[in-house]
Amino acid sequence: MKKLTHEEISKNRSTLETLHQVKKLPVYVVLNSIRSSYNVGSIFRTSDGAMIEKLYLCGYTPHPPKKEVLKTALGSQESVTWEYVKDPKEVIIDLKNKGIKICALELTDSSIPYYNVTKNDFPLCLLIGNEISGVSQDLLDLCDFSIEIPQYGIKQSLNVAVAYGIAIFDLRRIYDTN
Image (cartoon, rainbow, N blue to C red; front, side, top):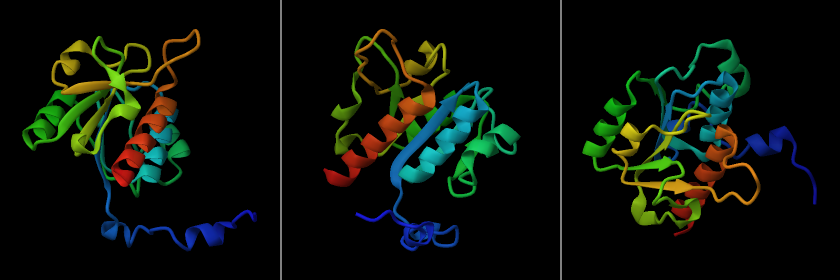
């Protein structure tokens, strides 16, 4: 085993110029009222790694060119298609009208484990809520289903950027392998 150099790794990567040729994961992500700029920047980077279709920043979610978002995004705001839309309902209703299933990453009375999503659930919109209050009930009412990450310790949830990373990369795996 030999650790790869940055040059060896980047040799097989897309560039900003070739990004339009890459088949993206048919997942739209809505971040609603995320408080932390650093969480948002981290979600940008993770979105680039999973190659999602589009990231919507809603409510009071900080967005580029905010310095703290850019610090953790490390340039991924250039490779991830994104848009700021104040009202998340506007985005969700538009995507739903286009036949895209709406899925909240939230603990509900009917949520399923994140790894039980199937390829039939794509394309989908993954709705991520506030770090403290999660996804609001009025937005949950617009969802087709919700997924959760089972917790085995004392705490009931993970950091929003960590939870997103777990969910989006498993959605990538499900889409690519089924």
